[in-house]
Image (cartoon, rainbow, N blue to C red; front, side):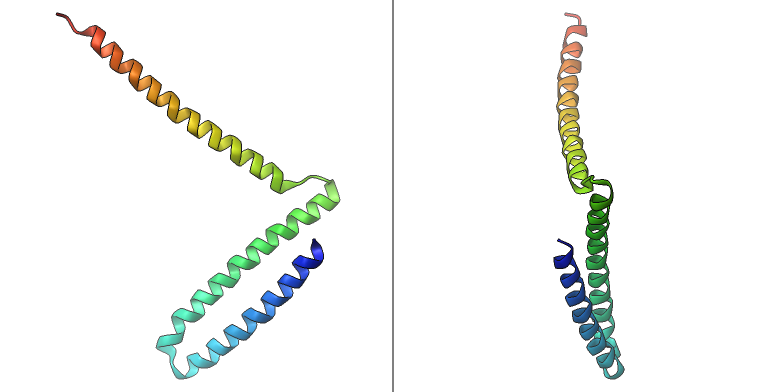
Length: 108
């Protein structure tokens, strides 16, 4: 897995450098047009590097401590969704119960 990540990282590095160098060169002649493009590609590249950093961190942690962080995160996310969905059901049931108590409080 680390070889694939390393190859992807190098391709991304070369690709982003070529694109950014072209945009910076174009910025010399048409600054109004290329300013937004430069910021867009720079932010896009930063997001890719963050994902790669997290993947490398997870791989290194797994090699060193034999713990898979990604599976732990996915398990916690599933539990969070389960509790959020059940809490909404509890609120719906509580509102139904409160409606029933309002009905019983009325005097005829």
